[in-house]
Image 1: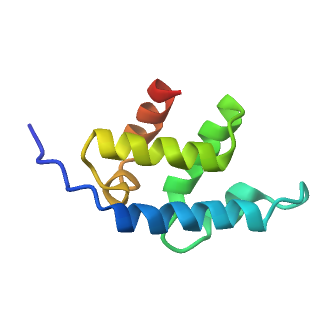
Image 2: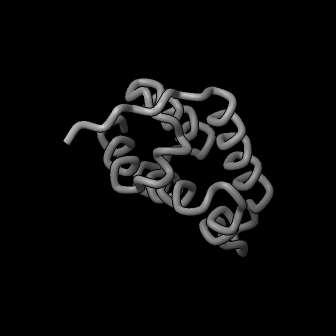
Length: 98
C-alpha cells in the first residue's frame, strides 16, 4: 500500500502559507473567531484549522507553524495541497515536529 509522494511545489506552498499568514494577521482582535475566518478562506479550509489547533496546543505563532508545515511537506516530499486533504497526517506530522 505505498503511494508515490507528490512533488513539493514551493510556489503552491508559498501561496498557501501567505494566505494563512494574511488570514491570521487580518483578524487579530480577540472578538474575532480566527479559526472560523481561516476555515472560510478559499484554498485553506481544514488545513488552516489543523495549523490553528497546533498553535493553540503549543503556543507558537502562525508564521512559525507555517514555516514548520512547509518544512514537514518538504521533508516528506509531499505538497501542502496534498497534505491539506490529509488532516490527520498533517496534524500528526506537526505534533511530532513540535
